[in-house]
Length: 365
Image (tube, rainbow, N blue to C red; front, side, top):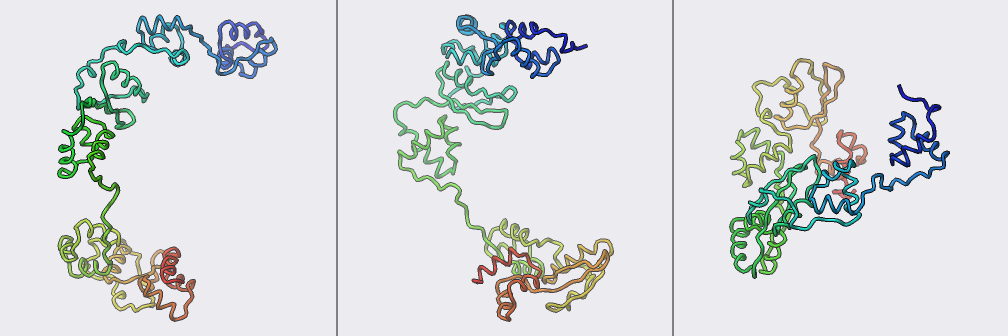
């Protein structure tokens, strides 16, 4: 059972804090009291509270020199031997600016067998960055490397070829790969065992014209009504439409998706809503959509007739259908010529105000 605060003497707090170099939080956890109680009892005893940056576990320079440099123990091994945390060892190594000589890096068969132009993958332990360790191993072996991050736990280490003399012999190879084979600079650098920066430097010195990055072909738009006529009514396939319009197949597929035209838009086997065929502009009709699957059938028939319908549900069974013109600048201009205000046009067409705002801006209103 935990000791009570009134039975704890100030000497116990002083001993743990001054002699054992325990922190306030550690003492509070050990004695099962609040950390403010520990601070108050220490101040009452005349003990000055240490700042947070105070090294709890001071390690002398000679100790680190013996264990880390002469005996060539790793930092975790030194921490375990001195019964301190790894962070304490790293902090003192940084404080004393202490490092092993290049030849003291322990052997690693993976790096020893790494040839120029080849790459290996290195896994990070517990997600901790090992970049400085990798560079230290490379310097100890006289390697020049390039490190790329593959994901959160994996690095790709490429051993570069040490440049000798000028790069005249590499220019023709780079030109062939860059212009004829259409290779990226990073792929060329990997093949030649060079860094990306080195390849860019060679290309600039040779006066090679670099491709513009991020430049794409303009998107080819296809009118919805033209697609409806070819795909829905004339039953042409996607490749036939592409050949007719002189575009790529992927352009046709993208435009079909953009306009929401699907295969079900082709002629239905039977019409469940014959009223749509005779419905005039600005006319309304009430239909029954209460049966299972009738909502999707209504959408297919609207797509087949190529008309714009505003659907309003009166209840769970019946719907009110209003036929309106398609929202185009020409239709909006016609209503404006009739003296209808922009606000009234938006409400009459049941349109999105943001779409109407762009159309009015296009018409100069």
